[in-house]
Amino acid sequence: MRRMTIIAIATVLASASAFAQSPGSAITAPLPSKALATAPAGGANPAHLVPARPAAASPASRSAAALALSPEPTYDEGTAQRIKEAALSYSDLAVRGGWPAIPADAEFAAGVQGPHDNLLRQRLIISGDLVSDRTSGPYDDTLTDAVRRFQSRHGLAPTGMVTPRTLAALNVPVQKRIRQLEASLERLANMNFAFGQRYVVVNLPAAFAEAVENDRVMRRYRVIVGKTEKPSPTLTAEITSINLNPTWTVPSSIAKTEISAHMRRDPGYLARMHMEVLDAHDAAMDPRSVDWSGTRTPNFTVRQQSGTWNALGALKIDMPNAYEVYMHDTNQRNLFSDDYRFDSHGCSRVDNVRDLAAWLLQAEMPRWNRAAIDAAIATGEPLDIPLPKKVPVAWVYLTAWMTRDQTVQFRNDIYDQDEQLLEATAEEAAFFSQAANHPLTAHLAP
Picture 1 (cartoon, rainbow, N blue to C red):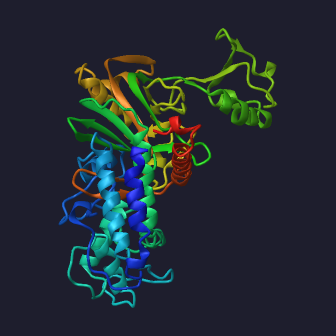
Picture 2 (cartoon, rainbow, N blue to C red):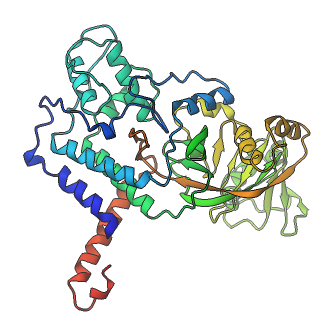
C-alpha cells in the first residue's frame, strides 16, 4: 500500500479540474525546472543544445550517435524516486490546466507564419521544450529546435517538423502522461535488481540497451525486441558468457508453428536454411520421418548451424533465465535503421553487438577486445567465452522516466501493459481497503 501513496497524490491533483484553467486558456507557467524536458532518448542534453539528427548508417556510428545523446542511465538506483518527483510535477501541471490540444488538421511550415504557430509555441513552453518568453511568432529556428527536443524525448526522429506522429504525441493529455509515470513507478516497485558497478539495461518500450559503469552509460545501442503479439519479458538475470558463431536451437513453439508450416509447403526448407532435426539424444533424424502437421508438441529439436544464415548472427550474449531469452546479433541488420523496432520473437537483437561483447569481456579479460572478437568470428568456429565475473542485466518496461539531469522521457505503451497494471493495482488497493474494515479479513491488510 505504501507504493500507492504517490499514485494517489498524483491522481488527486490531476483530478482537481474544478480549480484548473481550461485547456484552451493561455498558460505560460512552464513545468518546474526539475522536470524540464530538453533532450532525447535514454538521456538528455543541456537545455541550450539541440539533439543531433540521427543520420548514422553503420552499427558503430548508430551506437556512437545513441551514446552522444547523454551519459545518463535510464535505470539506476534513483530512478523510482525521480519518477515520483516527475509524477508530482506533472500532476501540478494538470491542476494548472495541462496543455492545449492542437487541431488534428493543423499544418506547419518552417519560416512561414501559420494560424496555429502560437498554439504550438504555447504547448512547447508549458512542457518545457521551448524555453522562451516569446509566445507568438512564425515557425522559426527556435521553434524548430523546440520541436526537435520534444521529438527526441518522446522517441521520435528529431526532424524539427510536426509530423503526424509528432502531432499525436503533442496531443496526448497530461493525465495520460501521469498514468504512464504511475505505471512505471509501480513496475519498478516489483523489480528486485542487484545494481553493480557494471550492468546492462534494456528498456523495451524505448528499444535501447545501455551498458552502465560507475553510474554512467558507457555504451548505448538500438535493439529489436518482441513483436506486440510476442512481447519480450521484463526480467533480471546475469550475463554468464559470450557465444561466438553460435548455433540456434529453435524454440519448440516456433518449431511447432513456423517451421512446421514451412515444411508443409516446402520439404526442402530445412536444408536451404542450414537446419537439422535432432532426436532426444541429439542424433540426426530424417526430416521425412517427422510429423509436420503442427498439431502436437514437437518430440524433436530443430537446430540451425552457425554461419551467415544463422538467425542469431555471429554472436550471442547468454543470460540464463526462466523465459529462455537472450541478447544476440542478427543476419537482418537493416532492421536497426527503422524507428519501429518491435520485430522479434521475444529475444533482443542488439545493433553493434560485438562492441557490447567487448565491453563485457574486457573488464576481466583484456585480450578480448573488438579486434580479437572479430578475428575469432572470422574463423567460423563456434567458441564459448565464459565471463569470470557475471554482469547483472535487467529488461525493464518503462514508458515514462526521468534521468538525473531531470529530463522526462515518454515512450508508447507498445505492449498495452500500463493500463492493465494500474487496473490490477487499483483492484488490489480496493481489496485491502475493504479487508481493513472487515473483522474476518482485517489481518490481511498491510
